[in-house]
Length: 276
Image (cartoon, rainbow, N blue to C red; front, side):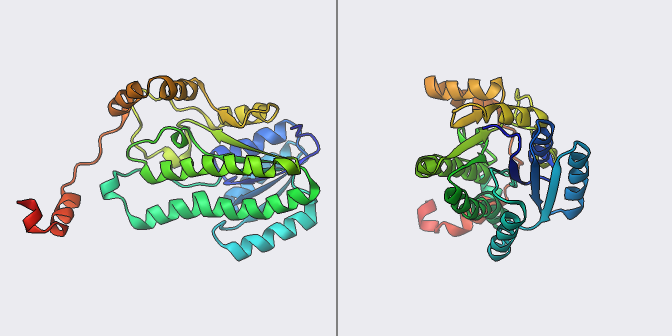
């Protein structure tokens, strides 16, 4: 895909990887970027940076889980700015917890934003792309969409689902001349992970590196864009020596917070006759 003269819509664009992708596209000569996120002030700050690069920019502060509002917004964007040639689904949230200490509201938020918000927006944009018989959709998954990470069960589950969703769309939308790709960053140094317990031996990459890899990956036919040598090494290890990867995960996974509370709750649910 040649991005010059094109229009891109990027979600999660107020910070982190989404922001870096928007700036990289602007630097590479894209005509217009449409930035979507929930934080209006941060969107305005990113828009100012992009405008300084000579790229047309529009912002939309909206919650992607609000289906009706998103439907109306996409129709207005398409009417105001013409066809959207590139959709980058980057919005996402992540919480780190041992599974036994996970909190249902956080689980629901991860599934709602990472999956349902992406699904709804993609369906609205893809239908319009199909009518014009052109377009590219990039779904931002993660290396955790290939290799599930302990303490990140729900996040890993959503990222695995994104890869399956991407693979299905790639075949379904090909007859309409729409390319569908998955971007798989490894651990990236962004606001979202600043308070995480880091996995040992894992060197975080930068959001700028992820963005540069995406832009170069748009020029190739590869359905999946891996970021960094650690990602390639981990995927090959999973294919050739999954037993070794299991050992590595055991050593690299951060220690779960020590708490007996979940086990006390489980004991209350187990009948005394089963405990004997």
